[in-house]
Image (cartoon, rainbow, N blue to C red; front, side, top):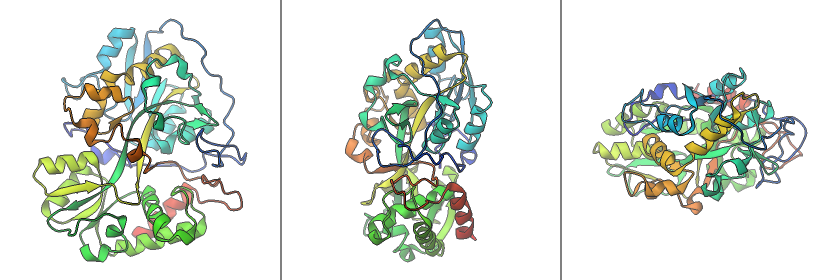
Length: 405
């Protein structure tokens, strides 16, 4: 799942389909993530880390999600790349990608210096040796980034950061306030209790949505032993698949285009389902009677990371970009245009909407702690188990095909 939604809602959401690949780990049994010592992962390749900055090379190739590196070509009033070029003397050559899988493949060409990687892509880039560890001492704005985004399993290995956090958000439960009463507080509204809204439940169209079912089962069926919704053994995956097959009987449509979800809630074809904060905001702005909540079980979500190519020929400009794009002014511009919480919360004082950061819970560590951020499922169980193999994304893809029929 990936958000392609700017403030003006002008980007093509149909291009934003999350594609994950399998096999980002080895059998080394090494720890992944500075704050997750129990997670079994991989031994990253021995890639040198930059130890000092030197003169700017004059250019940098940036691989980014649409909305992350705007230079005025999409909208003349939306431009933070030009200021970077003026400040640093580094010409920014920006290419947008539509899926995480596309980003991973493009980084393998060695043609790009930095990439905005989501959690489903970052581990693959580390394991393949396509990105280098990041010397955060060379990023002056790094100290202002929220601590709960640093040293996490999707952006670090054994305490070593492989990037600089950019922005984050949760996948929420949206419902029509007139048709859904009482107001839901749990994901049970779209799973065990979905029959109450049969034919008007909407779910996201991607294998990664299996993690949403697994997250619900963590609380609903604790005997399954699910500790991480991205670490499912065969039995746990089967339980999530069974739950999603039952849900399918009540689903009106699986969506991947934000416009279609807004339209479905506007017409009443859908009254409850998963969403993003920015979609709820737009729907409310159009007069649709909806609300969006973070359910009691928590949610899945995203945390994106700027990473540097292991083969970058413009590493000084690349570091300059990572520093600039995490500065308060740039973070404010990106967050409001894109629709997500900024990693550097000094940006909150610079947003045009004074309440923006409150709406997106930018400084709320307790809120962020309830989010299980996307991570690629691999055979090495990310919850630390070593007595079983977990299912990888290939198995999830097959399961999703079976669910939808």
